[in-house]
Length: 392
Ligand code: NZQ
Ligand code: ZN
Image 1 (cartoon, protein in one colour):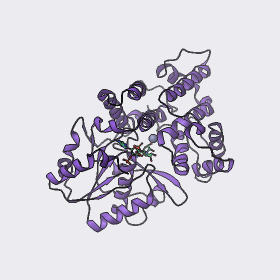
Image 2 (cartoon, helix red, strand yellow):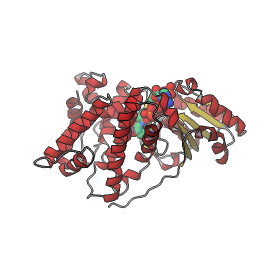
Image 3 (cartoon, protein in one colour):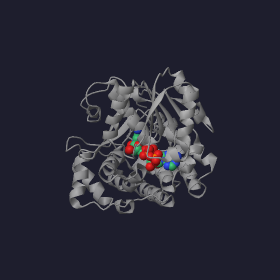
Image 4 (tube, protein in one colour):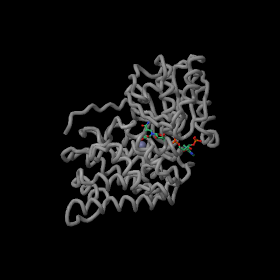
């Protein structure tokens, strides 16, 4: 077991009606003026935003608001948010939405708490010294940003999608009412479930010795999400299934399933981020579209690990060797993706990159040849190109 730090400071307030506590939770944090940050309209249509405003008013907290965050959240709106917060002397950000809203809120928080261009952090040019405190009212179980230390932003100048991780952006609290996710379109529910599974799978595919507790926890988390995702495809209002998935979403990306690993692989995420940046696809759907190709490409880097996944997570019989068992597991996972109507190729994802675009994706993913990604097999620019090509 590799040495590790586990830091999960976010207070979780989980269950029906919990959004009504938002105002009190903000007040507990000592906020004097709040930015309410939200997306493109779902929180208005559901009436949630109005309830949050009321909760803040009842708690006596003044606020300003900024909506308009889109999936694959844009840097230009982050700049607007930073200006607004400075002008209005905002000292707390309340993100009401999903990963995109939370990530945009975190970026605004960095921009207010630090001098200079906030994009520098995402370009790894500087390290942020702080972030405005953030609270979350979650409306989609997916990205896990409500408990993670990460924020992913797309810069329209070059359509670069870049993540930045720093513990100082971790949310002070996360309000999670599974009922709020019942209005999600089927596609977003399924895409969210894929993302949740992938946050644990990225950590699970590592080069460690067997980890009894972390592996067992991870395997059960992935199976739980698969089982409940299937239920939600037929019964979107099933509270128990919504709740299981929502809690899994937070635990899958708050570091717990990575304890004792050296961090995990994360190549599928890096490959997807370029697809999101260039083609604006839903993150989870982009992940399922590349995962099978990634897995087949890197398999020989640790066939035993893939075989364990096949047997313990995907319930496959052992084959004549680890490679055969592993391949059965990969096929079974792709079958699951299809069951929840998620793509397993770029064409199923609805995109058809040209040869030139495939090279451009690999170029961006390798930071123009300056980095490799992954630990099962270290992938350079040429490997990335091959995986994108296989995923067509
Ligand atoms: O904008 P609105 O109108 O709210 O619509 C959203 C959006 O279109 C809609 N939605 C959200 N809650 C809803 C709802 N529609 C109906 N009812 C509800 N209750 O769903 C759509 C997707 O929302 P988004 O916030 O983009 O989804 P998600 O949570 O999947 O976030 C995706 C973003 O997070 C990043 C991804 O790369 C992507 O940019 N990630 C962030 C991570 C992190 N910060 O730790 C880790 C992840 O790996 C991921 O990279
Ligand atoms: Zn993700």
